[in-house]
Length: 366
Image 1 (cartoon, rainbow, N blue to C red):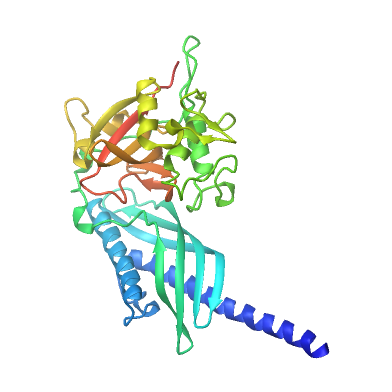
Image 2 (image 1 turned 90 degrees about the horizontal axis):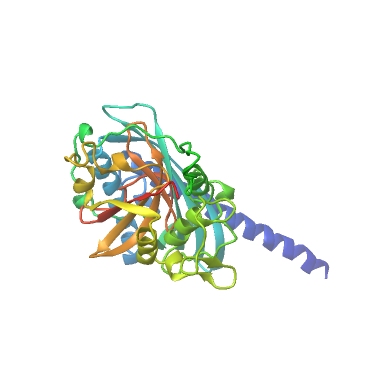
């Protein structure tokens, strides 16, 4: 009995020490990957992967392509990334001989400045959920496999061409406007933005302990949570922007969200056909940003914090929704969303020149 009592704590200490070693490896891995986004150098992250393993090479290739995309996008937008930070939390951990299977979440912070404009750093956050398999070789840990839904996974060759500043720069507008006595506010933009910031999930900068609003189901594994989040922003009875639920557009604890509440195209149709929102412009990046007789400063000049952007990948089929939460120091629109989690992210980051954007302006008054 005495021998057993002594061995169990010893084994537990060894297991804890082994896990601490893995945690150090993972912190180094994700910190190095964050730094690679600043410098576009493959060398800092290559040693974490196994060249002889196909799945490991694929995981490395994904990160290198991601880095290439980020730098190509920054070049097109005339910005420079100046800081990157990473925080991870392990949610599942299982060791099997020389391998470990685990799940974790990452909160990534990126900061940028404009090369020929505002030099004050602008900050945004992205949150992702990862599933990994690690393999130990000669006492060292390496990434054997990794999967995550990456909002920055794009072809660097398909980034829309940069337009001159005068074609798109606009002055940020206030979050709320006083209502006249005869026209009470129906849609509270300030509350919409506060909700979007509070419940932006895993993204750096988000509130609520990086958790979604627990009153609602998480649809991330069932087609995505972006529209559910957008509906919450608009219609949560206590913290949302003020729209009342209807028999068509609603959420209940037992049933979850209605089709119009959780499906992108149904939500878009509900906003537009019920008169809650108006379509300002539908088009590709250049169409949206360029100056025209109708939009001398570009279509975004008609948009305010609390308005929505839809992202169409297939003809007529919206794939994603985000909410405008503000504008950076150079007037570039910033958005929040779920699936993946974004906090004050430049609105087109992660989308390419074939994406069709829907700019939906919410009606403030009844």
